[in-house]
Image 1: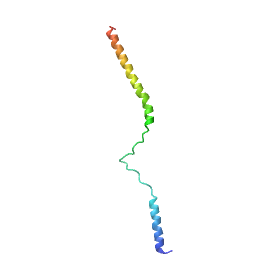
Image 2: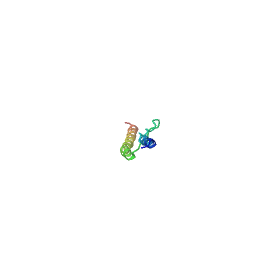
Image 3: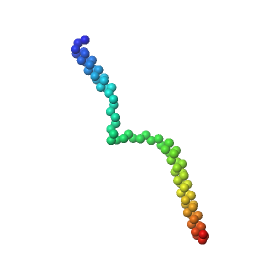
Image 4: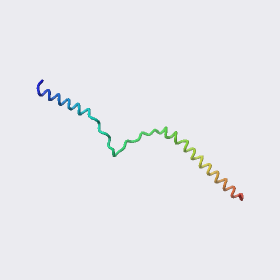
Length: 74
């Protein structure tokens, strides 16, 4: 095999090895955007929101009852 053919094969092999190198990681100054799963979040949040609404209704009713008792002279 002539010297130029060996050199050419060596150059091709080096290019192939360089092409198979490890990819660079993404820059650390910009974190990856989160992949939101809104169905799960909504399923958890919905009962909590309902409970908060009921809690406010109960508090309003208690305040109203307290005001009626005080107005009646109690």
